[in-house]
Length: 194
Image (cartoon, rainbow, N blue to C red; front, top):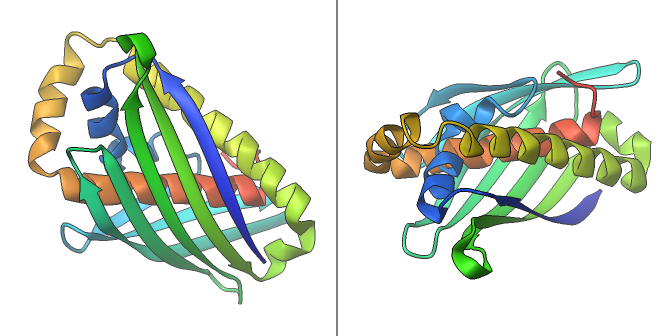
């Protein structure tokens, strides 16, 4: 089963702050229930895992992701990834493009995520409609968490973290994208996975 997803959300925080957050896999994983960053193999490659539950069906996926583009100037990051179901025959492939842009009037930022996803295995039995709805719900959960983290305590903690993370932007971007992908798959498998 192959499908495309486009999601967007607004954050009342400056573009640079939102960008640094989204390219930091360690921080992004915090907003993805059931997600785990297993390892960073280098600045562009990382390994992650996620556990999801849809009704009585529980699945775990583990896979690799790679940042193929991290554009600091346009605040655009592209990631490709693939994962296999642990102990099962399911798999998934994802290509994701995320962009952060300033909102009109400079009152915050907008994050736009476009993904192309291919799914194989038990998850497909739930059908495209169910998978897309779960995906939307998981994205809402993720965006709510991101907003909460970025719109609170902006003055003290974030400027220091932002500067520190700028040094390793590529690895962080990979992990952030992986976390988004993981969240997406989690949504596909069930919004209740926590």
